[in-house]
Image 1: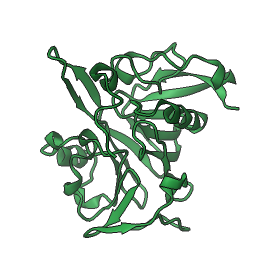
Image 2: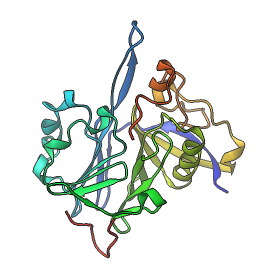
Image 3: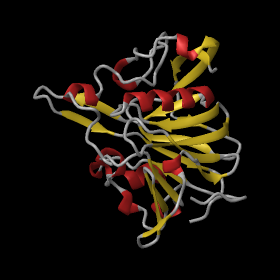
Image 4: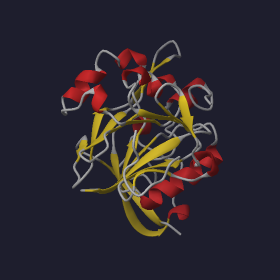
Amino acid sequence: MPRGYHTSPLDSLSIPGPLYSAQILRVGFTHPQPDGSVRADGSVTLLHGGPLTVLVDTGGPWLRPHLPGLLNAHGVTPDDVTHVVVTHGHSDHAGNLNLFPRATLLVGFDLSRGEGLYLPNGLAQGVPWVLHPGHLQVTPTPGHTRAHVSLVALGTSLGTVAVWAALSEDPPEQRRSRRSLVATADVIVPGHGGPFRVLKDGGDIGDRREDTLGDMGTPSRDTGTALEVAPRDMGTMLGTPGHGGHGDTIGGGPEGR
């Protein structure tokens, strides 16, 4: 069984690695408004330095004027991006796909390339999609939506980094996904909130509280989980399970375009 754990906020938006480095270009957020609406956008994360350049989530369409500049600040243009991994199909995560027409696109479990060529994959059956063996893979993590995925980067300076969203329309599935990621990840980049470290303790994760969280999806230094739904996160505030319902090649080298 996985050990217990606690979390600690990460003080940097950059996680270097000997091959792939992770750079959080934009920290996601959810801000409730007095009229009951919510202003929100998803985190945007760049994995680069190796033979692949991977963007995880693209923010909402309102980010379009700014996203190329965020990439350029790290020496990357939209045409340099080989893969775009959209964790799920909500507009605040998938809003700028058309900036990357040359990239291989994954939106939830839908994998496509070029002008509408959809490719088979095993994500819906629980099989990870390996982009670069030993370095980058996409794993199915249903719960926030049924077709939700997370990007896992191995071997960074802080260990294994997982880019994942928390808010859930299927709490039992989310708990299973959360346990799986916590057992392997050293750093979590949530869809809404700042990155944090997962620090393993003694004992069983199942013995610790799983219903407390720091503010807005970010971890408290003393809570047992930073992967549970924050009480003030968007789905809870709207009284709905999530903010809208939306709905594979594994080779010996990096997966190509």
